Length: 213
Image: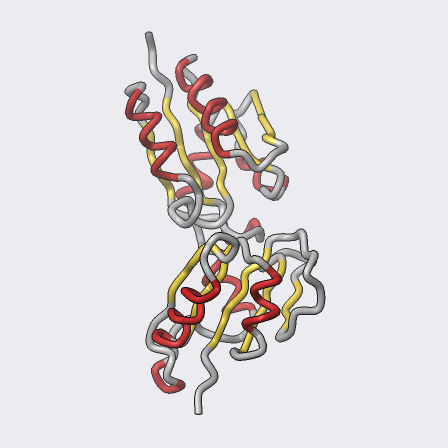
């Protein structure tokens, strides 16, 4: 049986202009494009050879990976688009494991991370020796314990929360400086220094800064 090929492509945080040249070249070769609801439709125009565009409505990695595998086993060149960079909470290793199990060749194409994009859009930096921020941690803000987030922030000076639990953030902002970036690099981007709503549904990254004396 002929095996196809899979491109796992990081498409950046949302602004189509942040798509890499390598990502565009891979899209141009692809016959099938699998993508989620947060992927900007403008990016699809680069898939000039594609005959199938499959949108996964639910944010379910296993469903998307199943479709990617099925199409690759049909001998198709498949582009699986992922927000930001696929190596950061993108389910990358699980998908690679499945492709290897079925001997499907693949290539992972890095993307511009939403973590770096969002903080730059807010006029800040992840590291700043002159201000005392010498490192940072990135954690799943929903799953990690509040105590661990506080410990990391106290030690490193900065903790980045992806998929944040906003109720935890309300507690954290009593002790730390908080920077909230919603829809980074998109037309409806919003930057806050105080949590106004605990029911945010859009993609949100929250930076917890240790207050420096």
